[in-house]
Image 1 (cartoon, rainbow, N blue to C red):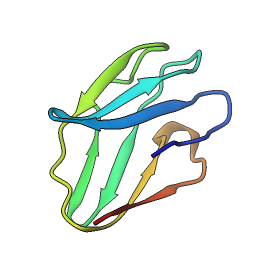
Image 2 (image 1 turned 135 degrees about the vertical axis):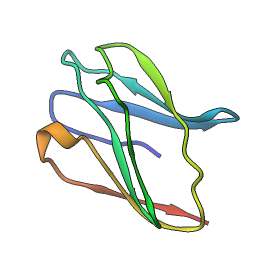
Image 3 (image 1 turned 135 degrees about the horizontal axis):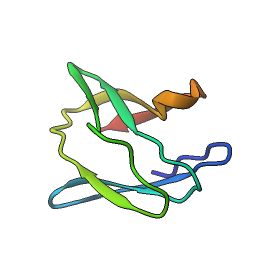
Length: 80
């Protein structure tokens, strides 16, 4: 999955530990995923050029992902 946003971009991929989020932008930002009873985001923002792992148990269904501080568009994630 690839997310596109304004000045800040996140690269998101899954590994055996969870969902890894990399902030490719120049400002601290957060990342949130909601749906199917899940509502998770980082306790602290992700620093520019830093990566963090968000541990989530994603069941099949539809989720919304976005950067909460920007009130920007949400992206839909489909888990099969």
